[in-house]
Image (cartoon, rainbow, N blue to C red; front, side, top):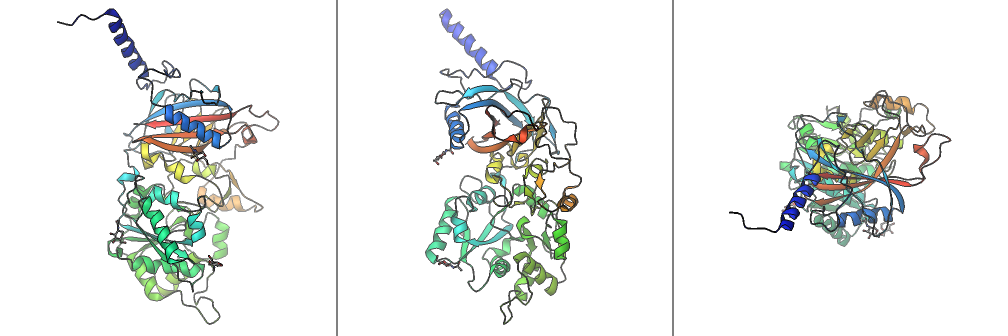
Length: 500
Ligand SMILES: *[C@@H]1O[C@H](CO)[C@@H](O)[C@H](O)[C@H]1NC(C)=O
Ligand SMILES: *[C@@H]1O[C@H](CO)[C@@H](O)[C@H](O)[C@H]1NC(C)=O
Ligand SMILES: *[C@@H]1O[C@H](CO)[C@@H](O)[C@H](O)[C@H]1NC(C)=O
């Protein structure tokens, strides 16, 4: 028999069940608004700290305080068989539209109702086994230690599980012009984030091209060399967003055979100028052991009396090519999924293309793009969903980690084409040159009023499997209004939360 219970307790139970029902993840995208965040209720989502984080991120970037705000919680469902160029979602991204909010200590920032999206089975940084790879980079101590230019944040994303453990990849960092104490300090900075790197002094008698080629010797003679299948030369600003996919791709080549794998520059005019089928270094150059061995034995960094290399070259990747070309019968294997990224200007066309670039480069120089933060969402929906494109019914397209774009006049163009956002500079053949790499591109929508773009500002892993991203569009950014059209009155902010 049930114990006798006062009526108000039953009412409380009914109220609680109702609240649970209303807050339960909603896949229809069409029921009660969750914008009433229920402060004080024990069923309120534990958003207090991350709400503060969002406000701090916005404050640090001088956004607001008057903002236009929208948010959505995306529940990833890891059952997709593939990762198409565009994943169609049968719902609106923002059925509630944007709200005006004044950012102050008291402002509630709702997380938005939950909607389900389909992604491939999860492969997170912690699932990567990269022990078959060793990487070599040469840089200066100043660059290495620089908070912005240095590679530490990015290395942490693709060389560890993000929780302080190595993914098994080897790393050699050759530093120019520094003391033993400085080498040791650099080693410790890497070890602190979970990267077991070998940090060594670059040979002071070598210049940049020589130091680059000398990395092959360092990798090939490393104590772990016998377990490595691919000896990889990188720049200190080369980033690998999809380690699992990269390894899968590399293992399509027979690593017992001689292979020299990489990518060209996107600038076909430069290929023609250089006149050689060489791997451009920034996209990553992958050598199998037989090629690495041949390079080491060939001693390609030998110089003449006049101080020039016998195999004359002013760039490391060119000296490497000259070495392989002169001393071996191996020719270059082009892999179109690697990227040198020699295009200038707004990189949006590239990052919003829906592709899965196996390497990216120049993101701190020729263009600017926070690749470590872009990659953060791999902690939630897995690596494959980084830069995955989701198209919603209200003509919003999320390029996951990079941007949220709205096409207020609809999407009547071919989304499978790359938008030509790049800057051709003064070079009128640049657009022709890019065409070989990107195929036919569609016209830029900047200043047409047909595209609004929120770029990602920051991302944080809130807890296992849960990542929050903040995207912003500044009122002062006139790319998103047509000529003559008034600017927006407020900075606009989008918050996306990825949950299991
Ligand atoms: C905001 O900036 C301060 C000062 O630079 C920094 O300590 C803090 O971590 C930043 N907050 C966030 C959330 O990035
Ligand atoms: C090496 O470092 C010293 C001091 O740190 C500096 O004075 C010198 O110019 C550097 N040399 C080169 C070749 O970078
Ligand atoms: C780091 O790598 C070296 C080989 O380069 C190995 O001998 C050592 O055990 C590794 N240390 C850790 C903590 O994994």
